[in-house]
Image (cartoon, rainbow over all chains, first blue to last red; front, side):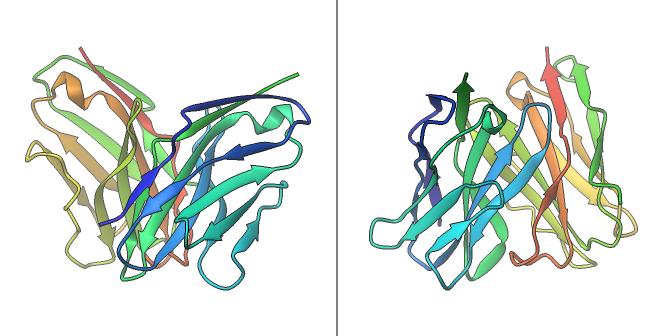
Amino acid sequence: AQSVTQLDSQVPVFEEAPVELRCNYSSSVSVYLFWYVQYPNQGLQLLLKYLSGSTLVESINGFEAEFNKSQTSFHLRKPSVHISDTAEYFCAVSALYNTDKLIFGTGTRLQVFP
Amino acid sequence: GAGVSQSPSNKVTEKGKDVELRCDPISGHTALYWYRQSLGQGLEFLIYFQGNSAPDKSGLPSDRFSAERTGGSVSTLTIQRTQQEDSAVYLCASSEEGTIYNEQFFGPGTRLTVL
């Protein structure tokens, strides 16, 4: 079975500061990894995903995440955040042999202050 | 085109009552998923439909929960004899072929409150 741990339930930062949202997973098999974002009063949206190839993946709005197999991590980073990045961020994993199920972490609320 | 829609957006019910939550997936999407988002619990997988195959019900928390999908499109999640611990946001998602290469698109959710 797979599991996902997001240790930080809330991350407050000031605008233009860098941010890292941590995600660690546990699995006995190879996995795919995802970050989803939920903006206030909106549904979940896929932010970025790692399926194979380069371990560094990027989103269109400046976020990036790096798959680190040895540390079983998939931390999300952004060098300079904006007020509009305020949202809940969920890390998710699926096993390669059972790609129909996404296992989600408990989420990290990113609050960006002016 | 239209995204995944869910109704109602909010539902308040009394303990012991039955509730039905509806999901309209994106047209043409063959896979449909139900999740539950509880405070501090993240998203919990409930059930998965793929085409005409038997649904994967492995995430349903008890036999009070059931779901059906009519005509391969609209889905209804039914909770019988609701309990206070059923209070949560119920999310529906759909994808084209039911594989992880095809992104799951989520609806806005139904917030269920059991008094």
